[in-house]
Length: 481
Image 1 (cartoon, rainbow, N blue to C red):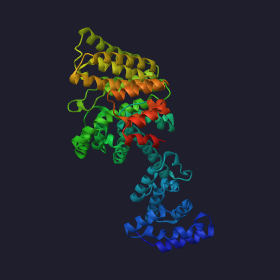
Image 2: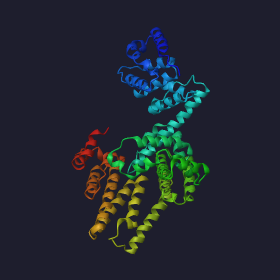
Image 3: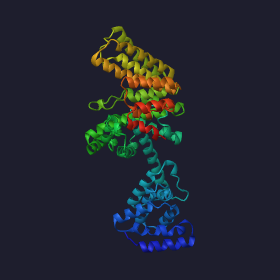
Image 4: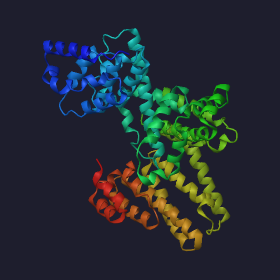
């Protein structure tokens, strides 16, 4: 690499003086630092990029003119400056650089383009040659998949589900989004690199302290970068030599963590598809996947981490949202039969909740009704669960009482969600207060749960939350967008 910065700058500033515009107006500000971008010292180049990024004036024009006459080393520095400034000034230049023979420049261009918002990725491509157009299209495909993977991973880290959870994805073309979500649902290996990158980015972010102690976060830390063999296995539900080689590279424990996370992502993809307009083709593909999952039985030790039933549940819910509730109704009927069997056996109320299939089934039925859009039905199920559990509390003692109290806290919280979604904000707030009284403690999630949006917007909720939540979490209420 040649570092001929004086010649480079001479050409730049002579030309800029001739053509005028932003560069000549800001020439004195920029020219102090530009020579250092071509320094043989990596430290000096990095320091120059930081100083240029700190310039308060608009230097977008300067960067574009400088890039036009720069060599590869200098172009990498200019891309770093634009990235540090969070500007889309060089989006066309970076898109063109994706087809460069210099792998370092390609990597810098990708990093810069990945740092931009999707709406900012609007390069001028009319004059691109075939290689440049192909490279840009390939990157666009990757970028969309990485962004979708990031949203699905964010859902994985949440302690619950809620309506509107995937609204951010709706900025993409609906047909394209559906195709990509279907690919995740099927565990298509085309998502290997996007998931590996998105998982590494997600693991590197700062999260509230309470989240870092939860199992989904710990699984993500282990799974990051290990999705290749997991996708390969779940795509065909069989091992292969390629998958075995990939497992040896990422490690067995990381591979198992990726398998478990991947199942959740597949379920989340189906949940996101529920927001799409219903159509026969989409319903047909969902039904086809459902049939395939019925015969998919992973062997030990995969059976303990690949819980395909959660994907089947989401398929049943999405198909119900599309007008075919037969599979969901069958599941609910089966759950009700569990309740009937327990009641007929006159189960001992001193049993732990975990050993009470009737309590678990009733809560699950209400959840299914809520997610299917039957808000009144869900409210009734949880209201009935409150009444029956309170009755049990009068007759139990010791650990069983504590177990039932925890169950009742969760039921009251879920009831508040159903009430808030119907605009019953006063009732929802009463239910939240009862949830906390019986032991509900996840105040951080209370501020994020989309199902609680309407009650959260009331002054009564704000006053109660500030008085009740731990101060560090109560302070977040004032920092919400």
